[in-house]
Image: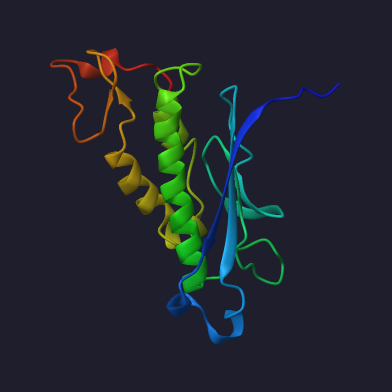
Length: 173
């Protein structure tokens, strides 16, 4: 018996700016990105996909597939300007999807925060490419934090309760 689960899938297509392409990859200027969020909160597969799973660690509760250039083992992302562009684009889209989770009445108030909160260490490759920093910066600007007065605020706008504020936070995001 296999358990089936439902996912909300969002796909994007984009173009890498010509100045970021190497001469050998000049014809590979288009890319595709697919992000899938499980309807029932669970950990994602924990890695980036490029048709097949790679060894690139992605500690977010989602599935991410990007058409990036891989090394000869097809397990690691090549360090190219085009790949950096694609992966930063991915981080920005994840922050946007987190904000959309807030608008979804079928999920709890913390769903947006949970989507951008890593459930473990980031892989060194995505850190090197700036994915973690880009996601953090993009998420800080989104209205993801539920507030006592109702609604959600950005990390810049939200205020913590005076005193021992840690006791007010849920045990698990």
